[in-house]
Image (cartoon, rainbow, N blue to C red; front, side, top):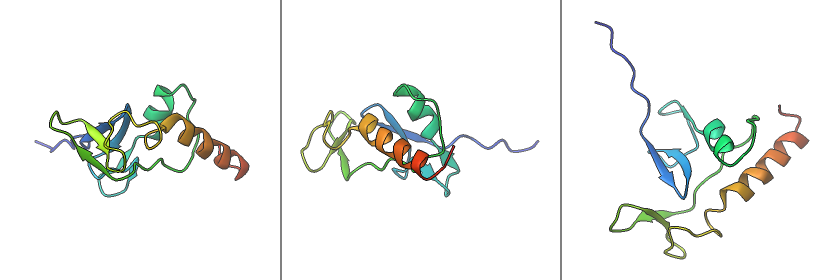
Amino acid sequence: MAEVASPPATIEINEALFCSHFKEICEECSYDGREENDSFFGFDFIDRDPIEPPATTQNKDGVYQCKKHGSAGCTQCFGWKKQITRLRTAAKKAGKK
């Protein structure tokens, strides 16, 4: 029987998805979460650079929080919609579609 490749393990950090290596695009595990993250935050997908989470830790409940502020809902560190908007603008200027 042929072995079926299982999807890469994902983690959620303040409503954005990343692979277990904390990357939105990861060649090591063949993961690309940009389309899902764009969709969640109300955008149509375009080819853009990935968002990158800051240094994080898990609290006792298993929720990821930023190391800098110790907050799981830190909009300063986890402001994904703002980061995606900036990356989409840069991609459009660079001529990506």
